[in-house]
Amino acid sequence: MSQPHSRKTIRRPGRKADASRIESMVRVDHAGEYGAVAIYQGQRAVFKGRPDKARIASQLVHMEADEQHHLQAFDDHILSGKARPTLLAPFANLAGFALGAGTALLGEKAAHACTEAVESVIEGHYDEQVQELRLAGQDALADQFAQFRDEEVAHKELAVEEGAKDAAGYPVLSALITAGCHAAIAVCKRV
Image (cartoon, rainbow, N blue to C red):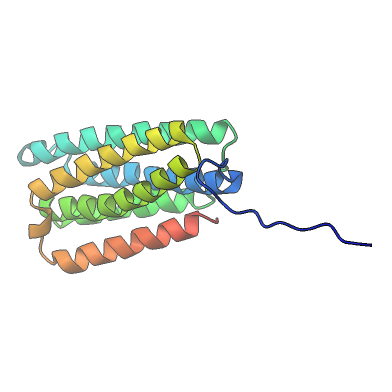
């Protein structure tokens, strides 16, 4: 008796995306947006009500609104069954708020350095996802992620214009935040 041939599935452009991969994307992006909202809330808590910080407080309100919009979109994906939320959401909230408040306590430039570091990581992260989704023929989801990426890039560019790279200890601060973001992404993909 001959045995049936087993064929390996080769991923090709235009093939339907693996549901588990989309689930992982939605889960990690949901956690990231949850943490981003918390970062801006932490920063605003420090700067709120201080007349000398009105400019940055206003910027933070607008950036937080963008992040809240992104978070709502990922909430909708989770409610529609595309993914389950990460079990680390409470940690993302706490860590995000602490990071935001901590960098704001170091001053405006440190708060902007935080934004620049986080958004640089997220820009690359969304870029990879958009490319993967386009290859898989998931254009609607790719378009949404591309829009979010572009809004994150605008946050990063604003932070740089506002002196992010002039923050005291910028190289160390940026490296620590960047490493933390990469670690959070890796963990949230699975947990």
